[in-house]
Length: 180
Image 1 (tube, rainbow, N blue to C red):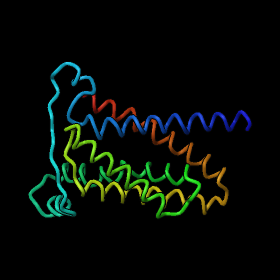
Image 2 (image 1 turned 60 degrees about the horizontal axis):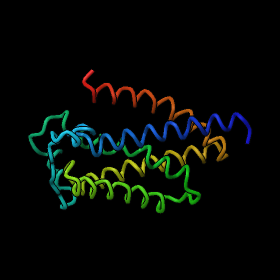
Image 3 (image 1 turned 90 degrees about the vertical axis):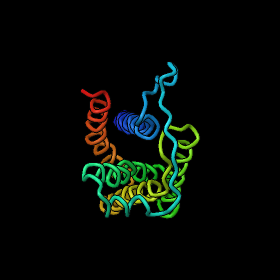
Image 4 (image 1 turned 180 degrees about the horizontal axis):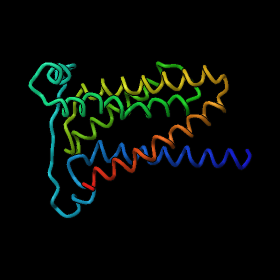
């Protein structure tokens, strides 16, 4: 492996680490600071929705603000697009079903952990929307792979794209999280 590939791998894995950090912050510390639990000032939030499409239909038909609807519905989709793309990139089996099952499992695990640690509301609709986002990410990567006809080129293009989108997204999310 040449030096150029090492640089691309460093960037790819670096952006992946930023993405995982953002996911952990959004999924588990949306309502509390990561250090708040050490100071006894943590607010516990626990809820569960196991009725498929209940909240989605409520958002689409009820008196819910547009901002909240966009944040919940589109946010749950968009945040898992990279997860699907990374699954397709790293998984040797490039098929949609296997990668979608991985995304679904990650989302379901996150919802279960939110419930167990009382750091959010576990919602089957979130799992469905996250899986849709993952499916979009998988499809985008597979389309990229098909267009470029080379796994090495697709990996390199994905690395550049993830850096161009991922690093500014990280900075923006951290600025919004800190209130600045």
